[in-house]
Image (cartoon, rainbow, N blue to C red; front, top):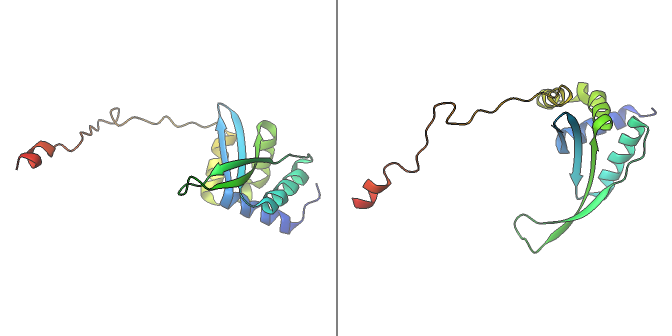
Length: 136
Protein backbone atom coordinates (compact mmCIF):
# COMPACT_ATOMS: atom_id res chain seq x y z
CA UNK A 1 0.00 0.00 0.00
CA UNK A 2 1.46 3.34 -1.05
CA UNK A 3 -0.52 6.05 0.73
CA UNK A 4 0.87 9.30 2.12
CA UNK A 5 0.07 10.74 5.55
CA UNK A 6 -1.76 13.58 3.81
CA UNK A 7 -3.95 11.11 1.90
CA UNK A 8 -4.59 9.15 5.09
CA UNK A 9 -5.64 12.32 6.93
CA UNK A 10 -7.83 13.38 4.01
CA UNK A 11 -9.49 9.93 3.93
CA UNK A 12 -10.20 10.05 7.67
CA UNK A 13 -11.61 13.58 7.36
CA UNK A 14 -13.92 12.86 4.44
CA UNK A 15 -15.22 9.68 6.09
CA UNK A 16 -15.72 11.53 9.38
CA UNK A 17 -17.79 14.24 7.72
CA UNK A 18 -19.50 12.51 4.81
CA UNK A 19 -19.15 8.76 5.33
CA UNK A 20 -21.80 6.33 6.46
CA UNK A 21 -20.99 3.15 8.40
CA UNK A 22 -23.59 0.43 8.78
CA UNK A 23 -24.39 -3.26 8.66
CA UNK A 24 -27.26 -5.48 7.63
CA UNK A 25 -27.40 -8.84 9.32
CA UNK A 26 -23.68 -9.26 9.68
CA UNK A 27 -22.60 -7.64 6.42
CA UNK A 28 -20.78 -4.37 6.97
CA UNK A 29 -21.19 -1.34 4.71
CA UNK A 30 -19.23 1.88 4.14
CA UNK A 31 -20.96 4.40 1.91
CA UNK A 32 -20.00 7.80 0.52
CA UNK A 33 -22.43 9.90 -1.54
CA UNK A 34 -22.03 13.46 -2.78
CA UNK A 35 -22.51 15.88 -5.67
CA UNK A 36 -18.81 16.69 -6.12
CA UNK A 37 -17.36 14.31 -8.70
CA UNK A 38 -13.75 15.38 -8.14
CA UNK A 39 -14.02 14.70 -4.39
CA UNK A 40 -15.55 11.25 -4.84
CA UNK A 41 -12.90 10.43 -7.47
CA UNK A 42 -10.17 11.32 -4.99
CA UNK A 43 -11.91 9.22 -2.33
CA UNK A 44 -12.16 6.23 -4.71
CA UNK A 45 -8.50 6.63 -5.67
CA UNK A 46 -7.31 6.58 -2.04
CA UNK A 47 -9.65 3.71 -1.06
CA UNK A 48 -8.32 1.80 -4.08
CA UNK A 49 -4.76 2.28 -2.82
CA UNK A 50 -5.71 1.17 0.70
CA UNK A 51 -7.55 -1.96 -0.45
CA UNK A 52 -5.43 -2.68 -3.53
CA UNK A 53 -8.47 -2.75 -5.83
CA UNK A 54 -10.23 -0.64 -8.42
CA UNK A 55 -13.75 0.59 -7.72
CA UNK A 56 -16.42 2.12 -9.93
CA UNK A 57 -18.43 5.20 -8.97
CA UNK A 58 -22.20 5.01 -9.28
CA UNK A 59 -23.93 8.03 -10.79
CA UNK A 60 -27.63 8.88 -10.42
CA UNK A 61 -30.08 11.78 -10.27
CA UNK A 62 -31.70 12.90 -7.02
CA UNK A 63 -34.45 15.47 -6.65
CA UNK A 64 -33.69 18.46 -4.45
CA UNK A 65 -35.29 18.29 -0.99
CA UNK A 66 -36.94 21.70 -1.15
CA UNK A 67 -37.47 22.34 -4.86
CA UNK A 68 -38.61 18.94 -6.17
CA UNK A 69 -38.36 20.11 -9.80
CA UNK A 70 -34.57 20.52 -9.44
CA UNK A 71 -32.34 17.46 -9.78
CA UNK A 72 -28.70 17.01 -8.80
CA UNK A 73 -26.27 14.47 -10.17
CA UNK A 74 -25.06 12.34 -7.27
CA UNK A 75 -21.95 10.18 -7.12
CA UNK A 76 -21.67 7.22 -4.78
CA UNK A 77 -19.36 4.43 -3.73
CA UNK A 78 -20.60 1.71 -1.40
CA UNK A 79 -18.28 -0.95 -0.02
CA UNK A 80 -19.70 -4.10 1.55
CA UNK A 81 -18.40 -7.27 3.16
CA UNK A 82 -14.62 -7.77 3.22
CA UNK A 83 -13.92 -4.45 1.51
CA UNK A 84 -15.97 -2.55 4.11
CA UNK A 85 -14.41 -4.49 7.01
CA UNK A 86 -10.88 -3.83 5.76
CA UNK A 87 -11.51 -0.10 5.33
CA UNK A 88 -13.19 0.15 8.75
CA UNK A 89 -10.29 -1.64 10.42
CA UNK A 90 -7.77 0.56 8.63
CA UNK A 91 -9.39 3.88 9.52
CA UNK A 92 -11.01 3.26 12.94
CA UNK A 93 -8.06 4.58 14.99
CA UNK A 94 -8.24 7.98 13.27
CA UNK A 95 -11.93 8.60 13.77
CA UNK A 96 -13.81 10.55 16.46
CA UNK A 97 -15.23 8.75 19.49
CA UNK A 98 -18.76 8.54 18.04
CA UNK A 99 -17.55 7.22 14.68
CA UNK A 100 -15.17 4.74 16.34
CA UNK A 101 -18.04 3.41 18.44
CA UNK A 102 -20.23 2.99 15.35
CA UNK A 103 -17.44 1.27 13.41
CA UNK A 104 -16.82 -1.17 16.26
CA UNK A 105 -20.55 -1.88 16.48
CA UNK A 106 -20.51 -2.68 12.78
CA UNK A 107 -17.37 -4.82 12.97
CA UNK A 108 -18.79 -6.77 15.93
CA UNK A 109 -22.29 -7.05 14.36
CA UNK A 110 -23.67 -5.41 17.49
CA UNK A 111 -27.39 -4.87 17.65
CA UNK A 112 -29.21 -3.16 20.44
CA UNK A 113 -32.81 -4.20 20.86
CA UNK A 114 -34.84 -1.04 20.78
CA UNK A 115 -37.76 -1.22 23.15
CA UNK A 116 -41.06 0.21 22.11
CA UNK A 117 -42.67 2.92 24.25
CA UNK A 118 -45.30 0.41 25.41
CA UNK A 119 -42.56 -1.97 26.61
CA UNK A 120 -41.15 0.91 28.66
CA UNK A 121 -44.59 1.56 30.18
CA UNK A 122 -45.09 4.89 28.42
CA UNK A 123 -48.54 5.59 27.04
CA UNK A 124 -48.98 8.52 24.69
CA UNK A 125 -52.46 9.73 23.95
CA UNK A 126 -53.03 12.42 21.36
CA UNK A 127 -53.98 15.71 23.04
CA UNK A 128 -55.80 14.31 26.09
CA UNK A 129 -57.61 17.58 26.82
CA UNK A 130 -58.64 18.37 23.25
CA UNK A 131 -62.37 17.84 23.90
CA UNK A 132 -62.39 20.10 26.95
CA UNK A 133 -60.64 22.87 25.03
CA UNK A 134 -63.07 22.60 22.14
CA UNK A 135 -66.11 22.86 24.46
CA UNK A 136 -64.78 25.77 26.46
